[in-house]
Length: 302
Ligand code: GUN
Image (cartoon, rainbow, N blue to C red; front, top):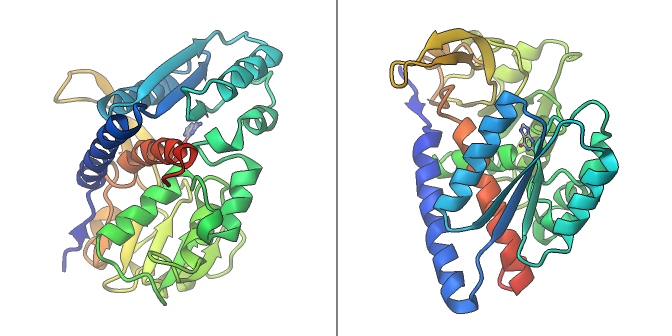
């Protein structure tokens, strides 16, 4: 058997089109568009390319977009002042400070300075709390978990009563997606197990999963024997395992491998996300959705 491929690249196009038309409608009725600012401190090449893609996508869906690049030796106080300026800027609905920050800055202090109502990354403790409570309290689900849930739902996979096993307990993926899948509501209502580095018999837990979400950061960790036949497998791993020359551009690019042994797993799973082209494209898409949601909250139409 060969699993159905869950293509994030295709789902991204669907959602970006939905966002584009909603932005146009809001512009016509209310005379405003969502505003997103990305703040990049320093010149980390991976961060620069992520931010460029975020800004390009924001432009494509009709947002006002600002890329605010700052020098690596900027002081923490200056960054706090800059965030405060955007907190008070009415044309900005989403503020994203690209991580990682230079070592001389306290990441927690910086993220906590963002107005929770503009925290489209969903990293502020207030938004983590809102997510935990669930239902109407939720404002900005963090982008990667939100993308995972969209992929599951849009693939037609039943989540209600499903056994979901999450591999990994990070604040950015494992903990929030586990929390989201156990909430009452559509696309959730699952029975959730979280496994991690100290879990005994990890394979036995995984084998029970109707939906297996893997965010461990270990290339090829999940073997085909760990997968229940017909299960939905979501691979969040993006591991750089080498470099190659791109056929399209002739430039050097990273060779990416997921946390799941894809070639073997696709013979057992019912559906599976590839790496690249699965969960990856969804993260920026959900950032756009959160920024639009932020404006809708402000307008009282969310
Ligand atoms: N660096 C890598 N991923 C992310 C993300 O999702 N948000 C922010 N702010 N920084 C990142």
